[in-house]
Image 1 (cartoon, helix red, strand yellow):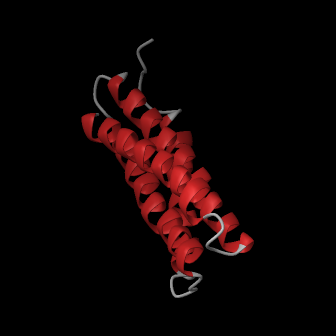
Image 2 (cartoon, rainbow, N blue to C red):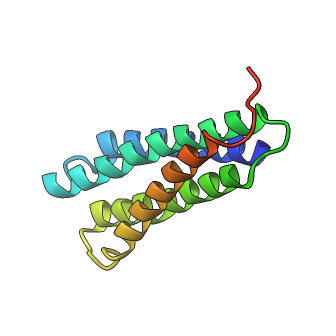
Amino acid sequence: MRIWLFLAAINGFLASGAGAIGAHLIKGSVSAGNLSIFETAVRYHMWHALALFAVAWLASRTPRVPHILTIAGLAFFLGIVLFCGSLYFMGVTGSTALVLVTPAGGVAFLIGWAALVIASFTGPVRP
């Protein structure tokens, strides 16, 4: 449970920092299109930091953490790295070198959400 809480907190911190960087440092130095790409990365980063927090919370509420929550956490983290990381790179540099990485990160996000759907049907959750 602690690893998911740690990853949620550090990614929430990083997403907040990236948002500030986008709003104050790179705005005006990149094209409007690249800024939009960067802002998309920030938005998905923060939402999936919160998803990691949900994994941590669910893991703390179950007597024995189901493997499906581990899959969800790993998928969300991998999605942040691949999807958001590639969009941050594209937004700042304008390069499309990592353009094929972005969909892989999106698939990882989908796997994470599907794993949470499955987790909703497995094992007891304490109130």
